[in-house]
Length: 196
Image (spheres, helix red, strand yellow):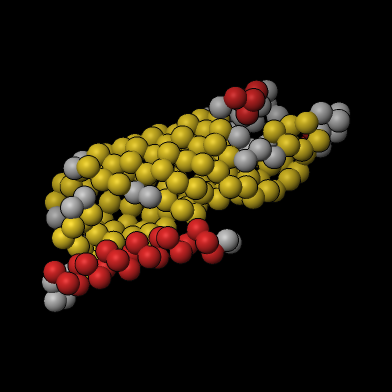
């Protein structure tokens, strides 16, 4: 991984943490875990052979609360998403995707949040009738938006949508044609968050 992407994030994290320490003697730790499920919808040429698939998300965050304008907490988080899609026309095989965050910038405005960033996506495709059996890893751009509503101090509801644009990867079929195995997705999800 290119470490130059990590340096600005760590400088910002250190600055925010230092500012919070200056305002309070002992920062209050905070953290959360979220679980969500929904539907992942392939876009463009992927729709020619893929059906919408089930999507499952898991995320974890840990850090410290801060008293700064527009910033409630600083820390580190990790998001993980899995989806699986059936093939059209009763074709045998499978299509699975796993994504995780690389450089995400979550911003909250009351109940509303937005999260632009970069992710990694691993795609595993097996379509015997086309002679395709491939796994690949590609970067992608993503933009997520949604709402999070606290129902109690430690439990909340979340829902949202995410758009993804993965770096293209084409594979040759047994007929010599190019088959795009990555591409664009639009997904929606809902779930819950546990926090401390």
